[in-house]
Length: 214
Image (cartoon, rainbow, N blue to C red; front, side, top):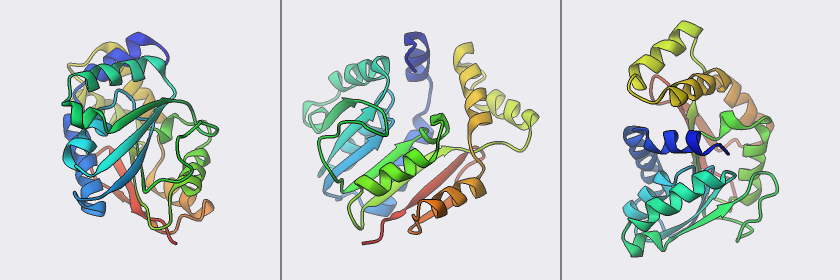
């Protein structure tokens, strides 16, 4: 999202439930006392990265996004966060593949709602396989494609009825661009990420989680 209006609409939207659920999925896998450096791929306006450091006092986050407007909003959110928490997040602009990361490997990798934005979904899985340390927890959450256009519109009406029209438009486009769970399973098999499990966790979200083999 290079458009500032799009980024602002996204940042202002109410994703509290899904973002808190994302962090809960991470802590169920890794534990609240997880210590290490987490790579957040496609961090957007930074809410999940900041929730992670708030929930897990021993981790730090390297938060990557390709959008300068999104990272500007993330830094603004961090400025109103307690200094001890905000200081454990490093904001990085870049895209995968090819982003200049501060570390060659990470103790955990997370990503929320990035997969459906990528022209080639293999980029996400290859990046995870390349940067996650052996045994690293991996948590990826994304939308999954509804069964029909009418089902997609029903989701928009249910969850974004009061949101800005630009967000409703982008949300619908994202639903249509997202993958079905069995498609994601095939992507994982192609990437040889057998340690990750795909499961549907809401009427619009699919979760991919597990630990990479050593």
